[in-house]
Amino acid sequence: MMQGQEVYGPEAAYAEHSQGERICYLEGGRECLGTIVYVCAPGEIAGTHVPTTYIVEPDYRPGWPDMVYAGDIVERGS
Image (cartoon, rainbow, N blue to C red; front, side):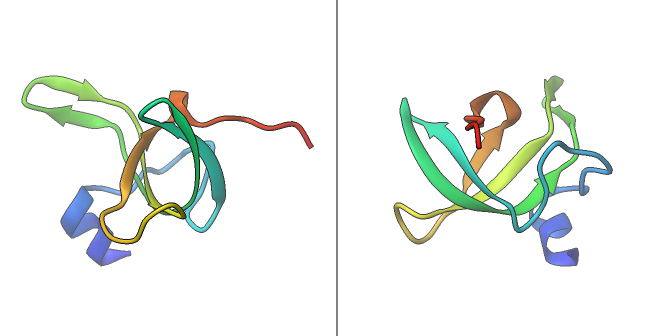
């Protein structure tokens, strides 16, 4: 996805979740649902390490996507 790379940086070579997957995650202390639209590789921004980041289109509002770290994803049993 070239547009994702231009906006968010290099795509992750490995991640626990993938583009197109629906996830439940924490945003501002509440559980949200959304679809992963891009997975950013870990890197550095202004000298600070940034882990793999999931760009998620949230169900709760249109517009700007949420940036979600792995630790914010809520795993649900099947």
